[in-house]
Length: 371
Image 1: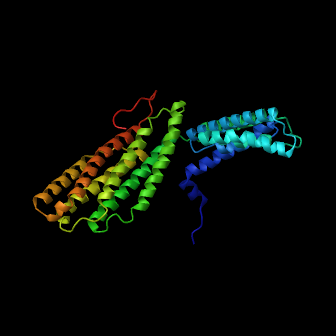
Image 2: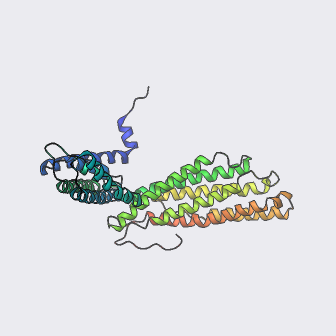
Image 3: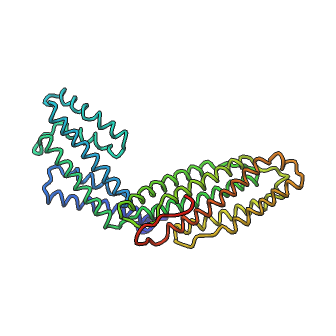
């Protein structure tokens, strides 16, 4: 019988445990702070700390700014409405809530950074009873102070307790996408040669789309860290753009691989396509290793050699006068064009991956080339 070993689980999920520890520390520090400062409704500071502590510094910065701007907007509108409109009866309270929420809900729809604004306004305008009851202006100021306190604690914890850089998360996410691309390339070429077409590749495409979205989110957070001088790494955007281009190349190859190749063409094209598949997978695996383990970026020399062999095989099919070569000409040209584009984008992705793992310099430098 196999027993669950917490140490093994801990080693397998270090990032998750570090994030949990950061949240616990942020909550503990916030609780101490609200007791020392005698904050009347300090639970708002605790809630803010939990929300703001994200898996990266860039994510925490975004969450903190969104929470603060949303609170300021909600508190300002709520206080203004409460001061200018009577709200002593249930009907009047309902009216002032509607008046306050309409513009804030519109603002949140236009800019998601203000999505907490309507909530803040409603909390302020709902009658507050008990020992902490206060006028609207005091309530607004208290709420802003509580949110600011939670933000400060959360950002401090994110910066000094196992700080996680979004750039590292981008590298991991990009490496995952590259590895799935290699899996897709294998499936597409095998479908062409084995007579199955592109069956079973839709789940792989779904995983690639999800991985690129994850890489995009990490790149956005990494860009925020760079803008606010919390990081001095290379520009993360070119990596994501190149991942998109490689995906588009594979989609084009997939369209050409919608059905298997005619049996008459396989003796000539099969060896060349096998070489293209192997060299592509090897190059993508090398790029993934560069991103994950900081190994030297691979060259695409073997891929270019395999591509030239495939072009020669296409010419051989045409010169041999095989009838299927004529009927399949458009599809084979699409395949050749997609392979050529893929070669260019593999070279660019290898270069971007090498840039992504370079040690940061004293100041960020712009990247050059495609992107």
